[in-house]
Length: 510
Image (spheres, rainbow, N blue to C red):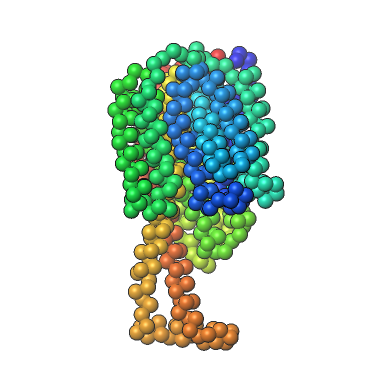
């Protein structure tokens, strides 16, 4: 940072573009129907606007450190914001679905580097004993973005037009460019360097992560490996990522510095972050679906259930950041993960007779648990990383965070579909016309329908619909319980993590 610049101003400068980038990962979801109608496309075609952004974003995130060294970190940050802002304008002005998908790819390329670069600047600008405060600032954007995105996107689309979900990025992007020019200054080790370009690493990374993200986004709709398309992409991803690991290990200037994984604390923390975001995204995708599909909630009322969780996160993060210097981060981390596990266990106990507050309190617990988890996890994971490698570390760390969210969505939706079929098969075994209890129950339903002026033969249809509701409810319970158990499995990894000794702490950057 420039001499005399306040850390608060730096935090504001780097969080502006980070927040809009994170929001843009989910803001389009609720506008798909409007986009489809406006551009005369099918729903499956319209989902490419989401897939295109996620794929390009996932490819660029691990490359951010390498690109920052190649062009200079400040230059790369400003160029990324400029590309993100320009492509946002072009997305809003799209004249066809193909043009929108193309500009969403550019938007993902521009946005991919913003999160790891901003995180590394924040960590370098704050002394290590204040990293908890820095991550509290960063965490508010990272955790609230997925919540604010759908709500903001829905309001803008209903009030103005779907095009304005992109146009609102333009003034924020312009302000961000100006602030970065005036406020940010590269330390010597992050200025532009002459180095040999790792072309093979670039090719393997692009193909491997692009294929993997495509599989995660389209797998469930294509019936996973029963689809030749998904199977083909899986083979390509496996080969490309294997070659990437081999190439990067021996490369003189690797795009992804895999040698950072030799640090036990960094590796353990990155794996924990993967499963933390798997739990977060899995649960916040399942919960509104359950509320709308099973309970008949409107989108607005489902949003009211999700909203208090965001408030809980906002309350928890500053408190944790304040006490991080006095309390062992592992204590906060163990407590936060346990609360997240408890919240998803509570969700696995949902029934079709539950009231509004029964849904709210587990979401509040999850928000509070995530607020307690994110700051100590990030601080502890990066505590051993030298400043000159901080951008490389944050790039790899954020890649696993994003993949955790993508895997969480794909995993939970698949579990939901498969377990619903399983429970339906098991429950239907009890609906035998030769079972006396079934005959009695069917007759009672038939009598009720007759009193309402409906044909008694409709009893069979009523029973089947109820069977589907019950089997789907059991499937939701299974999905919540599985992600609860997965995050609990991370507790032993937390115990492997060690905080950097005080004597190894480098002096603050100037």
